[in-house]
Length: 347
Image (cartoon, rainbow, N blue to C red):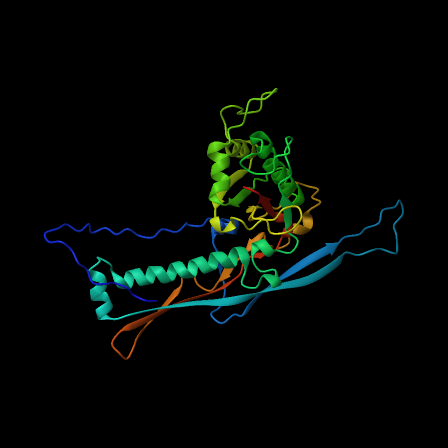
C-alpha cells in the first residue's frame, strides 16, 4: 500500500487547518441480515469449511376403535450442508521517512494504514456476504439456492419503475411480500414477533421515505396525503406486532433483473427475517418436534475466526515496518431459503 506525500509549497505566513478532508465510504447495513447484525465468531484459525446438520421427520400414526398391531413409526432423515472459508489478507509497509513525510500533512501514518487495511477487509466481507467468493457454489445471500426472487409488477397504470409507481400501490406491494415471507416461514400466531429487515440502495428507500407521498384517492388510505410509502409500510408492520428495520447498501444498485431474467440494471433489495421464531401452542402442540435441542434458528449465517482482523507487525531489513492484517471468513450463507426474498425494482 503506497504512501504518497509530496513536498509542500506554501505561502508564509499562513495558517494550515489541522483537520483533514477524508474520503468517505458508505457504512453498509448489509450485515443486519444476520442474527445480531454480525458474523458468528466460531471458526478456528485453520478451518477450511463449515458444516451444519439438518434433521427432518415424517410422523405417522394410526387411529381405530381397536388397538392395531401393525403400527407405523416416525422417520427421521438427516442431511448436512457445507460452505468454504476464505482467508482475507492485506499488508501495509512504512518506515520513518514515510512517517516524517506524512506528518507534514498532519497524518498519523501507522493509524491511517491500520484503518485503511481494516476497511479493505470489511469491504471484502460485505462483498462476500452479499455476492460470495464463488457464486457458482451458491455463496452469498444473493446467490442463495431456493430464495424467492420477485420482480416488481406493473401498477394499475402500467408504471414499472420506483419513481413513477403509484405510491400507495408500492406500499401494498411491500406489505404483500412481508405477508408471503411470514406465511412461508410459519411466523404467524401467538407470541411471535419478528424482526423484519429490508436492505436496499439508498435511492430506493430515500425515495419511499421522503418523496413518495401517498396520494388522496377515491377512498381514504391510512396516511394518504401526509405519509410516505416507507412510513406506511413501517406503521402497518409495527401495528401487526413486528418490527421493521431498513438498511442501505449501494452495491445493490443495478444488480437486479426484469421478468425476462436478464440483467437490466434494476436495483436489488433484500427482504428477510434474520432469525426464525419457534411457533408454539400450549398443551396440544403440532410443532412439538421443533422443541428438540440444539436448534439453530438463524436464517442467514456468516462465520469468522475473530471479531476483528488480526494484526501481525514485522520489522523489515531496510529499517521499516510491515504489518499484515488477516481474517478468515465464510461467504454469506442462507440456510432457510423460505426466509429470504430478493426483490428487483427498476429505479
